[in-house]
Image (cartoon, rainbow, N blue to C red):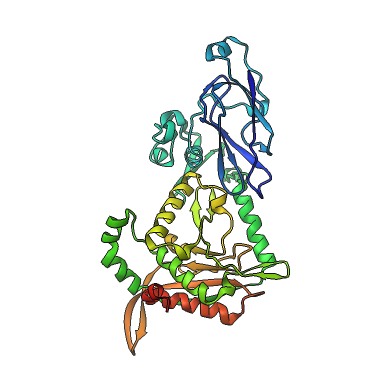
Length: 409
């Protein structure tokens, strides 16, 4: 029996997707629940598993195509065998859907890295689920066969990737030696760009700054880090303190946790905190829901889980939807100061930066302290300067005296 493989119903607010990668080619045997296709939406990469076992008879839509719910992608023969398919003439495959013969199952981040480093998937041993290749499997591998005298490999130490371009034959100072590469935006990058422009054009964004002495937090971590990790199975990081401090401040100033809907202000009686995470595909913001009801250990576990699955492209739509406030930590990359852009429809975002030792004055004396600049960008349409400044001061006070978080004073 021939079965049509269709695009499933996409999550709410997602109208279309990009067929990112076929993990099988025509004539391959397919087992039930095996991942056939990776679909990229503007938020996450979705896996499309095989509904039944069989042989992939025909591919109708190829890599890179834009698809919508219920589009027919391929034909799966549930009764055929591999030998029966092999005896037939070359299967009919649409020109746009032809795939390389060495297609190997790999996670999206791993495929991207292999493409950027020109690594042959056949030379990489997969250690992921079902033998799939992970990003860690790719790291350090080099496809030497693809490197020759006509290829220029330019190292990119910030992204840990490489761009490959053919060196044209030039003589003297020919302008043809100026190499360019045109790469289409991913759907995620397009969506990020769209939302950033939307935020800038619809909200009256202002940013207020303050500095916080991180000594109390650093001392607390140093004293309890090992015991915390032993008891909870997760390391005690800094983000848990920032999330707790933010919730502490939002409770004092609910307008900063609110949003605009038409001519109404919507006050949220819950605290869903988004944490911006950089991934190989771009920026994503998974949501830690009901953060006010979570312990430090629960927050740290969710952060660790989100970070791991974000790199693997495994976050779900639901985990990236909603949120009442966002924290962006540019400090992990060394940023000293920035003005973060609000994630609509939220009304404020906290920018956290690198903690550096700086001279400060305490009780008339110059001392060295680990200082961090904080930036709070807010929508001035509903948040006045007073509330924004006092919110940032409350965050600062909670971090400089963490007992405030525990005692809610």
